Length: 436
Image 1 (cartoon, one colour):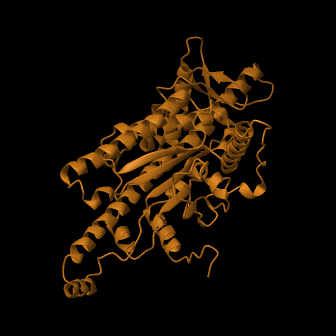
Image 2: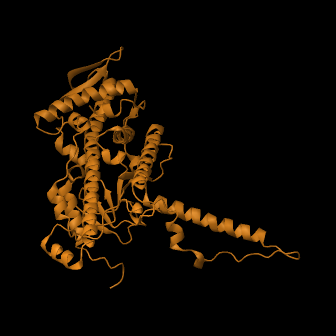
Image 3: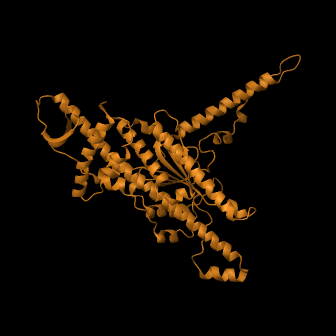
């Protein structure tokens, strides 16, 4: 069940009514509740949480999708606002309604007992009953939410696999070009005219940013936040250790973190796991380069042409906060420089003060290089799922000339066909960057 992703955690889950449950009891309560959810899902032919969390089936890429990408101008940097997980789960989970409902209580030994109770006025121990109902509602809400988040996490893996397939296909096409260039011009022209499989696109996707957790998401219930971070930690660990993600171990994908990961509200175990994910991916990429250098001539220019997909995880990220932090650092650097110059430029007769910095000194490049996105290119295409048409404080600085693609598809349903539609739409855009 869902607790398989949180079992190793020692956190406590809190509901909106501020009750606190120990981690062991919470696992029992959630397991019991999700058993009912699982049965209800099977009865309604909907997707079960157990199937979502335990399904590690390798996601395949449709060959026709890759073939149709031929000729499209692809973005170098694509970003996703992964919206619609909770709505996706609400559509697939049955809602318990009516006066009769299952509630959960516990005896003195900590064992969980499920029993049917009828809500009536004037019931004795009404306060205890309300508390139990609050627990039940909180856990049921968490179950609904996490079912969507788990499906969304699987979609993240699917999108990464698809982007890797696109990158590998592009690399194969480049090799075909290189092979054709070795022939004489006449043969090359004739071959190109007869073969439509030779690529026409001149770029590939190298960077992908996933908006996983915003600075505004801290306003959500504490139990949901804790469960989300537990899921992030679980997926990260599985990605590092599972042999189903061979691209990670082969050094074809590199992970980066955007946002305030050192925020004390983020569980330390999640923070350490994310940092380990970045270190492991960097090491795998370095080892891949070293392996290639060992078999290719040291002076071969192709040594540096090793395609790598960089996945940026925006966690505890906010566009305004990032701009504010960068501007503050820049302002402080100007003040420090002026103060240093004032004390450094002295003569034997009198101290010479430096002219204070003016507004003309401020350069937008000084802000850009202090953002957490300083070492990656500006985003070319932002895709937001779920039907909302706004950026929600995401990449406010970096999206100045980005193409914005909004679709009604919920994130867990954003499959390879939906991705192709977004890329095809982008390819038809004319980007002038203010010119003509």
